[in-house]
Image (cartoon, rainbow, N blue to C red; front, top):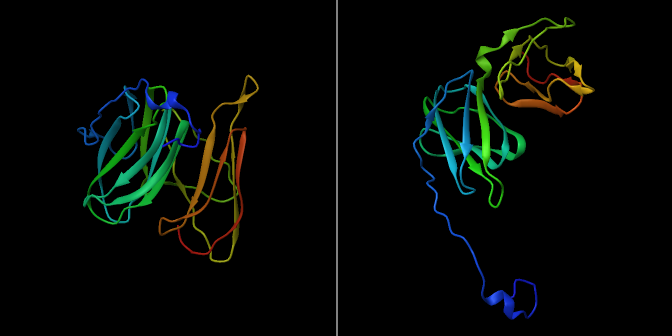
Length: 212
C-alpha cells in the first residue's frame, strides 16, 4: 500500500524497531489518599496499580509527569473497563463511581513514539471529604504531587452555587495549576473546570440533586 504517499519505491524497504512490553505486569499497591512515583522505560509499557474499593465509592485518579501518557484506565474486580482518562504530558485524570466491592486495577499506558520518563499517580475517594460552610474561605495546601483534596457541603434543590478557587502567585506564575470538580451526592460530576492561572471557578451551577 502507498499509504497516501503515491508511487514511491523508497517506502518498500527500510529500518524499524520492535518492542514487546508486558500489559499485565504485577500491580503496585495504592490506597485512598496515597500518591505513587513510577517511570516509563519503554513507549509501549503499561504500569499497573491496584486498590481495594467498595460499592458506591467515588474515586479520582490523577496522573502527573514529565513522561507522556497515552491514557489512564480503571478496571473493576471482574475485569470490566469502567473509565478512561486522558493522558498527555503534564497531567490527566479520571473519575468513577465504583459498582462493586473488591480489587480494582489502574492501568497507565505510555504514549507510542514519545520520550519516556517519570510520573506520579494519586488516588482519592470522595468519602473522606472535609465539611465546609458557604461564603467562608477555607485554606488548604497540596503537599504531594498528584494529591487531591476533597470538601463537602449541603446543597438545596434548585439553589445555585459558585465555587471559587484561588492560589497565590509566585514569580508571576500560579503556585499550582488546578482542577475543581463539583460532584453530586450520588457521585456523578455536576461540573468541572481546569485552570493554569491563579484562579479557577465553577460558575453558577443549579443544584439538581439535594444532599451532600
